[in-house]
Image 1 (cartoon, rainbow, N blue to C red):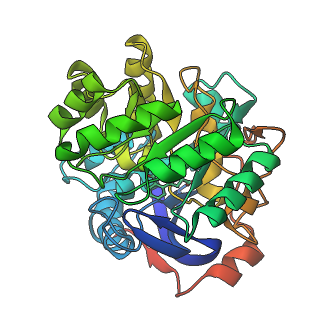
Image 2 (image 1 turned 30 degrees about the vertical axis):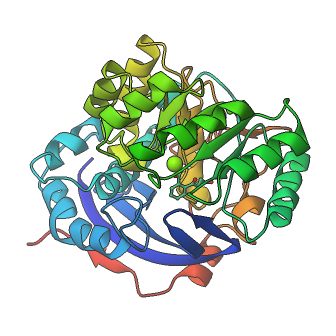
Length: 372
Ligand code: OSB
Ligand code: MG
């Protein structure tokens, strides 16, 4: 295809409950949507996972929109026969910004696959019609509130509970949830870089609670610190923020900094790089799972496709609409048992519902066209 025009839409979806992590508290999911139209009328949509503020990663929503408008889309307009695999190479001379790059690559994938009648899951090599999923549970105001929230998600059927932790909210909530829900509950903890290597002895006390993994305790670039912690803990160490590319994944595995990887397509520059990480992790016997960024139904549909690949053996952070929003941007995503069905329609299998798009849009869409 040749991209004939693109649009950037900004939406805001109120979260049903505030989401607190060691990085801050979110009450609304603002999201940047990219729509591309090809010269043959193909149309594709994608969601950029950049947050409002550059706290989880250096990218942020307005920055991603600016970059897409000024640099990424113009670089792609110049490519006459663009296929999905050509997007990343055409943008490689522009440094960084994996989330913005992932969004435009995904929109191109959606457009091309919709035109070909092929689902993203089939294109990526998915092998499962549905995937087991978990919930990421934020830091609560009280331990009672936490137990109520976990109880609600366990009762709903989720296959795994992940507790957000930070200094002052770690051993006690983990112990209490383990004690209350028993050893049958698959439980993990995510620190979002809130600790330093000097906390290793404290973190090692988490070994008492049978966590399936501990996610990203230290800074993104501290592979050595994670390797030292991994050597002293029984709990498997999983990296999220550190894994920014297939090369970073290889380095982390070689350094023994992790034995599990959280793959987020936005963080690594797109679904094709995400698949490369899946492939290399699988070859190294490192289990992977699909992370989440509080995406709307648009982003979660694509994540479900990725999570259907064979190496995604742990439940992902891809929850049902009811976990996040009163109303979604797409048809609601539903939980069946402990799983969600992988969309099998062409492309991501979804598109924004026009009424929902109108209702959630916060500013006029920005139209981007080739200079003439
Ligand atoms: O670290 O996995 C994380 C959300 C925003 C930023 C970082 C993370 C998260 C989550 C939410 O844990 C997972 C979800 O989308 O349900
Ligand atoms: Mg994480």
